[in-house]
Structure formats: C-alpha cells, structure tokens
Length: 276
Image (cartoon, rainbow, N blue to C red; front, side, top):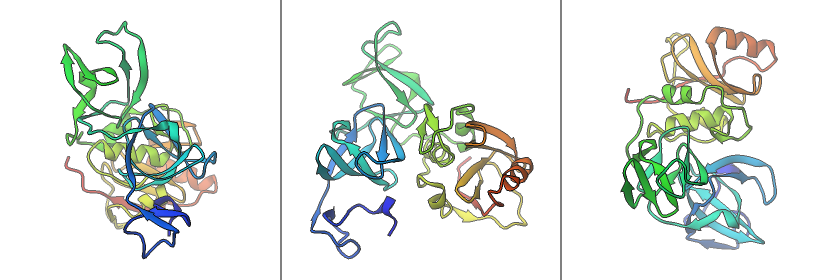
C-alpha cells in the first residue's frame, strides 16, 4: 500500500483497516484541526516534508508519540506526522479563505496587530460581523476574502493564475511556496474538486485525453514527477524548479525544454469535470 495514503503502522491503525494493515491495535481516530497558519506534514517525526497543511485543516489523529502526532488529513486522505503543538480541538468551520493569502487581525481594523497570516483553503469559524470584517474566535478577517463552506470558485486555471510568480517550494501548498502538485491541488480544491497531493497520484484523476484530441483549459499535463495546468490548447501554468516559481509558458516550448533537460516526454493527459 502507498505509505502516503495508509492511515496506520505496525503499532496502530484506523478502525476499518483491519483487513489491509497489520497493527497491534485499531482506533477510531481523534478529530482535530490544524492550529498554525501553515505546517509541514512530515514523512516521519523530525523527518522530511511530504506536503503542507493550512490553518483549520480537518485531521484525524491516529497516534501520539513523544510530542508528535501521526494524522490523516481528511480532505485528501494524506497521512503524515505533525508536532502535537500544531493540533487544536476540532470545531465546525463556516467559511474558507478564497484568496491566495490574507491575515487574521486582533481587531476589525487594518491598523490592529496581526495574529497570523492565512493562506488559501484555510478553514475558519465565523461567529459575527463587524462592518467589512468577519469575526472568528481567534480574531478578524476581511469578509471579502472568505466564502461560506460549500461555496466554490469556478475555474481552476484562473485560481492557478492568482499564484503567478509564487516561489517554488518542494511539497509546498500555499502562497508562501508551491510545488507543481501543490498548485494543481489547491487550484482544483478551490473549485470544489479534490485531487491528491502528489503528481503521481494525480495521474489517476479524471479521464484520459486521447493524443488525437485537442487540449482544453483546465486539462492536466503530466511528466514523470511533474504536472501542469492547461490555460488553453497551447499555453500552460505550473510551479517549476527550473525557474523556482509559478510560471506560464507555451506548451510546445515547455515540452521541448523539459525533454531537452532529460526529464522525458509527457506521460499522461487528464481531464476533470469542471463546471465552467
């Protein structure tokens, strides 16, 4: 089984996985949410970053061990380790951050101190309104930066373009830094379409596009270890280590450049159902 999507280990696993994971015990999991603005989801305690989670992400805690927590992110099923201090008690979210980045303020004025930054997809509980500000238990957010839970944007490619020039970060999932699969995941998630966190897993999303068929906006192009979002039949956007940023480029030029660099040809062309 894929470690990234396996909610258990030899010590403990989630209930319902008895026929797939051999563990000493099985647990229902403890509901929690991510407290900080952003946190690395690690391969192992103090290990390398696999992906990132943003504030309010819904989690199931499977195991606590020496100050670390093994968790499953409920949005995409990705599993990994977080410091226990990054966990907060679960509570229902009412809104999500629909812009690349914002701030949580101590009060409903731009002059108030900032509690922390917020990144697209952050989940918040709005308890009141103060003019143009949404009040949460932890502070105030510009209301124009929020959408109610269940209300999505409508064009993943347009979402991706909001992140143009964002710095490249391996495993990154926010405006502070993105990798190719992070850009694809956040762009589709903002439009209500959840895809996996890594490009090899994303190749299973949607349906294959025949080589004879023209590409369309929001199609996904894959290379080994890389993914890009089509803006049109001839142009694409992606987060790339070659330029250490999110860039737009012509598809034909990108295909030639990537192959010339020794990274091979396009391996998959996939199309997801997008309402727009």
